Amino acid sequence: MAVIDSGVVPVNGLTTTGKVLNGIDLSFGSQSDELRHLDTYGHGTHMAGIIAGRDDDVSSTVRSGNSRDFIGMAPGARIVNLKVADAEGATDVSQVIAAIDWVVAHRRNDGVNIRVLNLSFGTDGVQDYRLDPLAYAVEVAWRKGIVVVVAAGNRGFGTVKLNNPAYNPHVLAVGASASNGTYSTADDTIPRFSSCGNGQRNPACWRPASPL
Picture 1 (cartoon, rainbow, N blue to C red):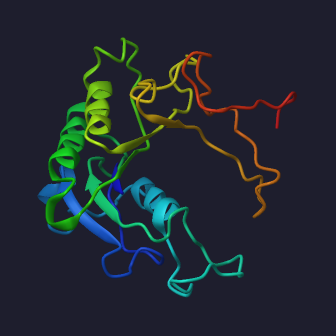
Picture 2: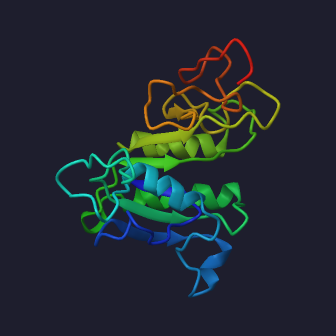
Picture 3: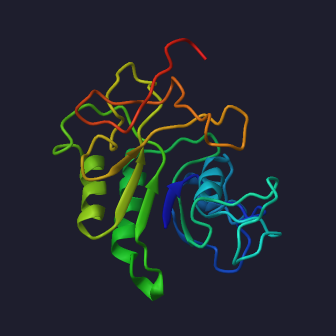
């Protein structure tokens, strides 16, 4: 799985040999040998852990019954790390598009076998997805056989519409969830900041009747 984000650092759960492969680094930090590929913001490592993390103490063949052990959604997956964001989490659309192009071009190189692309941020672009360069880039990846998963957005732009490129109907738009401080998923809710779409293009969404 390719993760275009702020990089990945080798924390517990992401240190197994072959767990993280470094792709291209298009961030400003790429000019430094000490910063290249490494996460100086935190978001990329966070996402890589959620996707494929498995704490070192957890068996590779079974899930742990210890609630303190962390296991990601796909602990057997391998992360291809593409760094685009700097220490403030900032990047440019052109850097993201270039990273997507790299994924498409190298998806089968040396047995990498990239089958999923995760993009957990977007822009406030409002033009039709058929005209927007970023929306087009993720669609190209989809047309090349890659499942593209994109953040729905955090409603930071004053509109209920999904962020760009999540509004492209060829990708999977994913909203946020709130665990409410418990390990059980039975009480999970969708937080108010998570974009729910405009009724035409939206992820599954639920709103509580009263403020949380």
